Image (cartoon, rainbow, N blue to C red; front, side, top):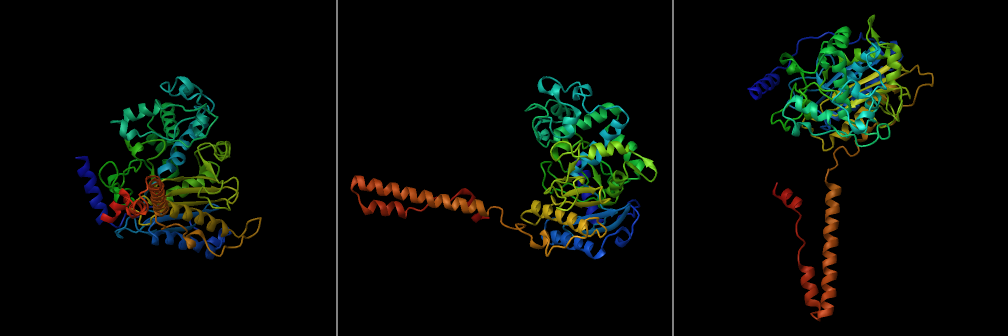
Length: 470
């Protein structure tokens, strides 16, 4: 029954190309009104479209904001490759993947910290009694926020758990591999534990708590964990052949988040670029928006300040190569998501940059991860380079951006592997020939033996044979 319902929803989404108009988002201003160049911002259109044209993703939603206003809001391409549903920054919904860690989970912890209900240096076991024993007893909330709890990156919950309750139990039973605080490993499990803490302390499920404590207050109507059936048609699809056995649209892409019931600390949130612009501006405002206080300004400062390596509390910071380009300031913070999403905020320039794509949806580029990495960085750079009132002066525009060069975007993935395999085969053939020559010298069989060994063809590799059949 579930498969049938999902199939019907996908079919309906394919024939419905016009979504109901939505409000939301920040008020708009011309770039010049907030000290930016429209001509320089137009570079964004070029680099994002190059990603579409290269097959990195079928479409994208972009919003750049500064000084409380949206200055560049664009939709590019379509939600999927059939070309029926155009992307808009206001209406199109995307699976945020790991942006969930900050837009949902970290934010929930910030709110509860404000209320005095969470101590960052308290052991996790205070809030989750089932998480104890051995090194688990030494793990604090702060360790989870900075990915220094000693937890592994993740576990295949979807393979070992049949129910959300079993998946939760598996997370709580996760091993701590090294002394908490002594090592860094980016961990989905840590984010899941933070989600469990928020639920335990608030007495509500994570999505319910966030809706009342954050999203409803900000007017974020298009931000939720489980996409309503009526909104599936304006949601970008993700994987077409996942382990679940059916194409995904309006259902979380991450298998472990799905195993946890679709509401998880590390993934599962959906949103629009317009909604995220309000969220970003709330943080730039020090935790309030439209006269509504969501988080204390001191808490925003505490959680977004670099505190352990390049990590802040829950958030990442702009350390180069993280999708924030090369020109954002040291105080810039943000995060990325596996599905092709990113949010970067630069408080020193009072600006933010949002990019939403579904690069996991049957990408036609051979290296979609390289495409999205370059486009993310180009987008951030183009936005910063468009600032004309920077105290440090106006920066020179580069002759070309990463997307203009498109280095390695479509280089065959197996080229180096194939070349090395061929080299190994040649070396093996030479070794056999040398061995045969040495053997013939000892036995006196002479050139005939050598000739026979050299003439013997090298065995074809299974990979090459399979490729030839295809």
